[in-house]
Image 1 (tube, helix red, strand yellow):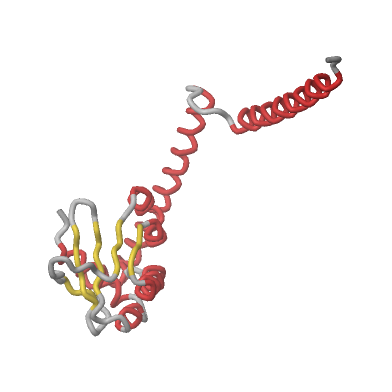
Image 2 (cartoon, helix red, strand yellow):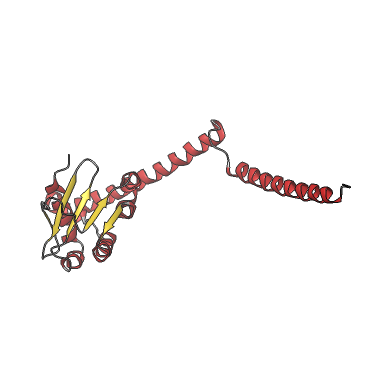
Amino acid sequence: MIPAVLIERSINHLLRQTAGAADVLARHAGKTLRFDLVAARFDYRIAADGCLSETALPSGTEPDVVIRPTPALFARLPFAGREALRLADYAGEPQLLGALDRVFRHLAWDAEADLAPLVGDGAAHRLVLAGRGSVAWLGQAARALARNVSEYAVEEAEVMARRVDVERFNRDVDTLADDVARLEARLARLETQRPA
C-alpha cells in the first residue's frame, strides 16, 4: 500500500517546483481533499503555503473535494503524464476543483534539477533526455501494439467487423427499412382500393 506521506511529499515537491502552483492552492488554505484509491483513502488539508498536509477528518465529515482514479487514468498515466489526470473522477466544491484543475494542468517535474546534485549537471541532462526518449518509444510501441491487435481482431480472427462492412450493413438496413415502408404504404393503398 502507498503510504500517505509518500503521496504528500511527492505532490508537495511538484507544487514547489511548478511556479505559482502552491500560490493557487494557498487561496484555498484549510480546505480538504481526498484521494480515494479504491483500496485506500488519503485525506489532506491545504496548508497556508499551498502545500498539502496529511489530516484525519472527523468521523462523518466529508472532504471538500474527492479525487478518484479511473481505469482509463491508470492505463494512460505512463504515456499521457499529467494529461491522464483529466480522466479521474472529481467531485466537490467547484472553486477548489477549478483551482486543482489549473494546478494539475501546469504541474511539471523538473527531473533534471532533482538528479543534478546526485550525478552532476551534464549527466542529469543526458539521463533526462534518455528518459524522455524511452517514454516516447514506449508510447509509440503501445500505439503500434494497439493498432496491430485491432487489425488482427478485424482481419485475421474476425472477432470485430471492419468499418466498411459496418457502414455497408447500416446502408443495407436503411435501404431495407425504406423498402418496407414503401411496401406498407402500397399495401395500405391496395386495401383502401379493394372492393368491399
